[in-house]
Image 1 (cartoon, helix red, strand yellow):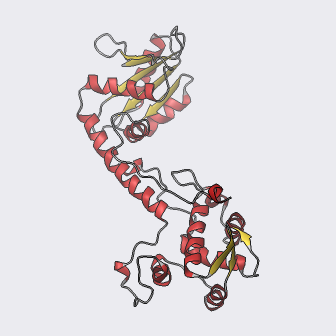
Image 2: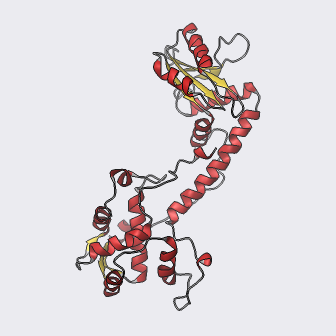
Image 3: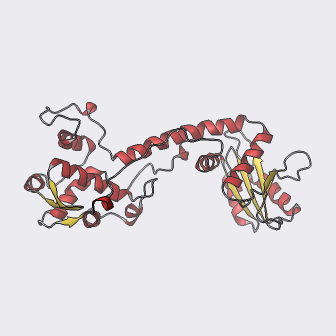
Length: 309
């Protein structure tokens, strides 16, 4: 279930070593620029597409700004740019010389390792070239953290989906109602309940959107094994059940998947029905902390520029 990962598998934003050339080029006229101006001009120099400019990290920051920031940090450590005043940088003679000798820039992490590793605190500056496999990964640390979290989330999502498939039908019905309540349906009073069982009328739960129950969302929960997709006929039966309750909205949740025919049908009808498959189900459960708990958290710190005002 690799799809739990919220991070795109492919990014249109170049890796940070590619931005080394652009940052140096932006400063090559000898001007002193604020960090945000360097970032903006480097993005333009790299000719990023609109999609690349809009890419965000899981934390919400722009991916391009994060990677350019990492390039600036390594250039500063190497002494190729200097910081005469807070958050302002200019190129040094060493940086100008390197750019003149390497106008094509850097195109890989391995090349960046060889160039910048001697300037990292834990590497001796007079050390000989270190074998590539012994060097730390030069990817952006924030992105390394997010990639690790995504791998953990994927593993937990797989386990969670397996547990749901193995659970009792009553438990699963209760779980999906709890999820919808955690998402904010049912208001602050948590107006929702499981109604599954004999004589349930074809629905497993109901959420009252107001105190009087004038607006209701009905829920159907199907605990199916992987590969046992839900087709149009099952969705049609759920729509019929909604009409029997006089309802115009419903949520159909399964641990499996929906056929394309079922999805197309749900989109074509006037009754508003949301289909949530197993992959999306566990993604929502993890996001809203239903069936999972935070095991450990880490703080990422940065300089408080206001402190030095």
